[in-house]
Image 1 (cartoon, one colour):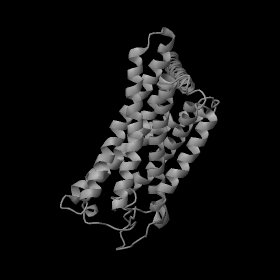
Image 2 (cartoon, one colour):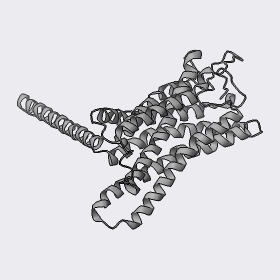
Image 3 (cartoon, one colour):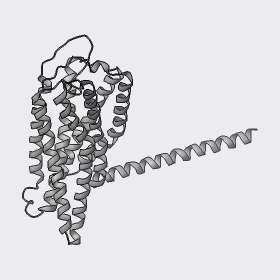
Image 4 (tube, helix red, strand yellow):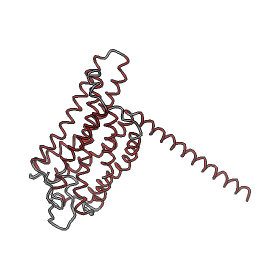
Length: 324
């Protein structure tokens, strides 16, 4: 991915103030909603033992998600400054690198969760020897290293300064190459195919299940698969379809429209940070328990605040009646 950092292309210059305000507002909403849910998930997953591959994958998914979301303030400031990057040459490639690193790690971790559910449901006996938490940790380690190496060109591509305006093209990977096309397709097709195929095979297995005791496992696997597939198609499919079209036709007359679609769908991937905590709630008892405890405490605090306010108002009314 040979992407110049400080280059304001013609189509970037057309970013309107309105468009930047919309982007900034969208990122602020995602940040405010996603940070509490992902922070709670991170805390919950690191306070439970990783006794299964799914728990290992969920722990690392929460790390990727919170890292993903915590990078949004840079995008927020970039758009509030009307597409001006105030953080310098070093943070521009670093922010792009970390954003897409965590995005693709999230993608593959969700596909790993689908694959683990497939093995647990469709091949429960044969997969016992490979469905170990230790093996899952090794696989996750290989994943992080692989994605880091794959995304490293963002860090080391040549920097070019064409003018004094600070436009960070690595936020949306706006400069492309033929290598970028191949890597984008491969990086997305593998986890998407894995997830969809696992979902189809789990549904097929459901048709043959007759034992009632197997239903809870099947039902949990179906819920997980549906949530992950919805996440893929809502947050990631639009971006990668748009990205492929943008790379192929970026030199044509539709450059401005394609660049805008590339930015919009890239922003849409951040919805993943909101959808994953929903998945955690339905699929992980530790997260669900902590969230319900937090909501219960919050409800009691609000009730206490209301009682204190009522008591204060009653005291004031009594005092005034006695005084006058």
